Image (tube, rainbow, N blue to C red; front, side, top):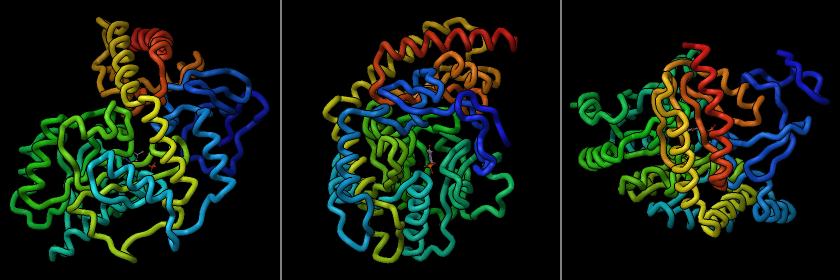
Length: 404
Ligand SMILES: *Cc1c(COP(=O)(O)O)cnc(C)c1O
């Protein structure tokens, strides 16, 4: 596909595989919560690279640290000790209360490692065909195993045969989980996002998390919580499950962990920390010094600048302002989420809003057809949140009027 682009890019190269339906925008640089395209048009960034740019763009303390690290050592190999890996692992263990960490580079890789942990947990107990409980509308990535765990037929279409060994259940229904696993000795793990991202900002209730924890304890299953999107401070706690007071056995992380540098991690509690030994799992890039420095500095800056508190402050402000501005609007279904992970669901598909918002200087995404997703950097100010509302709400009202 050759799309005309404004400015000095005349046409998109046909040599990039067309796996994304892209907007006709090429971004050039950013500062804080703002980005500029190659024509100099500026945008307020309420997408944050899909919940990735934790510290916004061109952060004045992150960038020099990364520059220094690049000059020292970008990559070596896991054949050697990587001190920064140990520093980041210590930090993630302290923040989560879990036990140890495996590093990789992406969310799907973190989830793939979690699935392997669950299967080996089963095999070590003599279960030869382990099965893992997964959820409707879940998104866990696009490798063959993680798309099989994903609860979206559109993502799976064309890639069968899917990986077997998954049992699918609805969200927030402990009786359904019990019924789907009744009398099945092969179940080894329960695997879900604390707040589904791609699926439309759907939260697991704190009560359900506690019920799932209790059931996993009772049945000796692993509780595996995918915090790739909802983790790393986005909801106002380091990890979204922490609102419920429970701890998972396995927690995949990625997206916001490196503020844009690819970093993935699987954090394991005592029940899962000793399943893998030498030779069981690995990845070339995982845990390299540049990625680890990005993770260490991201967390350091989040702590120094109180960004968890800001996620709550700016997130609540944004949510309240949206609710005020959209009160009594026919066609608004629900505003939901926690902290700076918000979804605005309409009663009608609203994909057009992405381009219209961009035309008006705002970057957002629409997921699950009807849900406007706002996952900006955790440095967003309340003034910027007001600006999001001022641009977005008239566009929502206009679209709903057209579709009425
Ligand atoms: C984005 C996402 C993934 C996949 O991460 P990639 O880095 O794209 O592989 C997995 N799980 C959740 C919850 C995600 O939001």
